[in-house]
Image (spheres, rainbow, N blue to C red):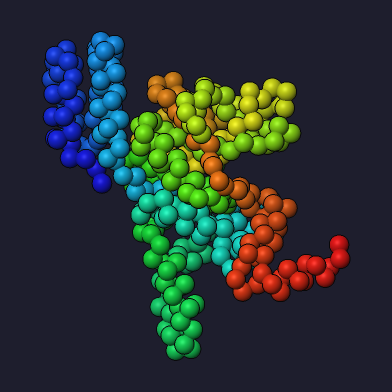
Length: 357
């Protein structure tokens, strides 16, 4: 829930120096202050250079206090990719709908967001992704059939899935790349901070990965990227973070290096799959030209954003990464979750033992 903008304005302006008050008063953009906390942040950042060093510290303290009151409630899941690594299966079935026992991959992602306080989820889809919408729909005929058959446990699960969040679907328009679907959600996100998270992989952690990132955002008030420690031998598979440690599990990013050679990697901290972003990412994405492979990449936009404000990495604690966009890792995930499934674990475990591999 957004902080009352007039109250926020009075609190900040009263606490700032006389010079800062005059600067805000002279601003031609002062009317924008009547919008949201994020506009407050943008305008007051403009006048940061007018403050003395002592007032800068005061300004940041007040601004961070106000940021804590911003509740992130929207998320974007890009889900328009072709899933070529799983062809021919993904010709008719979206890669996000590949089952992990009895739930599709994307449902694990949605459940992570809901457990992190997200209420509105924008799923950006493509031409063959209608089954994602159907999965999170409220199927009246199926519900009635389950009622008639007395299958109450399944009925509850179908209802729960449909009621997880407020789902909004838009079609991706524009060039390929993972930056385009984020930009497509601009009008729905508006001027609020939001989460962007991939729909074909997930990290199972307690607390959820997205929640850990949101908590860092609430503390520092700037964009946050989730990160995990990877083996030095695997750094060439990821975007690697060069960063300065700020506190336990939190780093201020200096640079993002895409798939470096092992000997060139500045660390083994890999940026990974979940982003807490602010609306100032949208103008950058709009101006950003195609990058590698002629596609628009979110990482390129974040590099531009880092020229004007800090971006942090949140190292995810207590979690395990499941790369379900990779065939071998997908199969490992299915086996691991089947071994933990309440209806399968015993029999499936016995079956694996019987294979005598």
